[in-house]
Length: 134
Image (cartoon, rainbow, N blue to C red):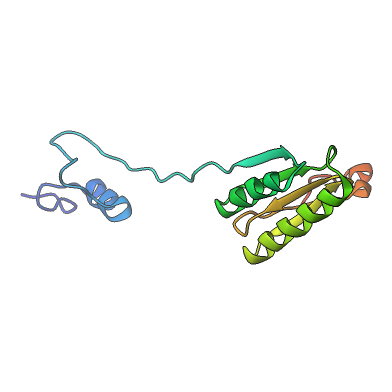
């Protein structure tokens, strides 16, 4: 007599796995278990010192690829800094991303798939640094 949870030689566990993860008959052999894990690709942050418009183009290419760009303008001429910031703000706007000023001469440009949370200096001194608003 067949078990109530057995069907065509497959246990209820095998049928549940097949329903949740799908099956690939080519990969399944007698006596082996195949479990597919879906992982997310690692997020990438590019850190660069911008001195030229070529650096701005590299940062824009990174944004288009879905990577965050932390750009330091410490060594950039004031005029170049303004041009690069304007250019990257336009790229971020087109990608529906966000821009955050991290420091006086450091900006974080992020594409739309990245959520940026910033805390203020007051939060740091009040001991609420790193806590999310509820």
